[in-house]
Image 1 (cartoon, rainbow, N blue to C red):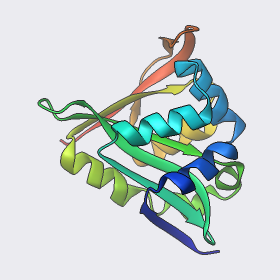
Image 2: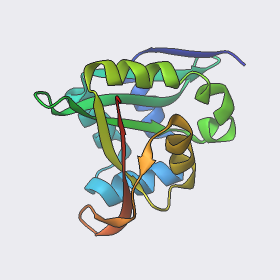
Image 3: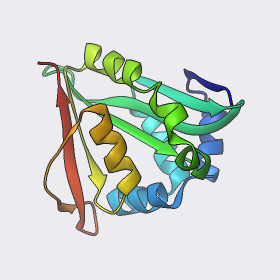
Image 4: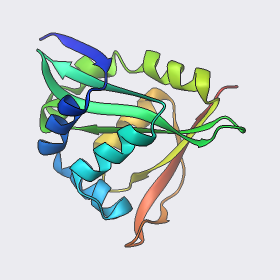
Length: 153
């Protein structure tokens, strides 16, 4: 299997939206009451950097970073994936750390929230070195999400 990552193109990101894994669909809805397509379109619109990951040329995830506070150097990283990504995470995981370093080069502090129910995403964030906080109510429904963060020392 060949894994590649390229700058995000909307048409490829929309393939991810149409095939989004259930845990990410639930997280998107709980966080913003948005559909996968709405969320991906908005995320691409506001992000300073975004990429699409492919397995054998097929889009399996879209990820990036959006500014929260440019003056303070705070960015909000995000990733949404398909079931194919969930089935073969190790191939992609090995390629993630350089992109986190790219995000940290622009935003020395990265923060966001992850749905408490999204076990795969919590494991991925921990593996990348993010610190996960305790669950707290988040989004329009008050569903428990964990804040997460990573800072340049």
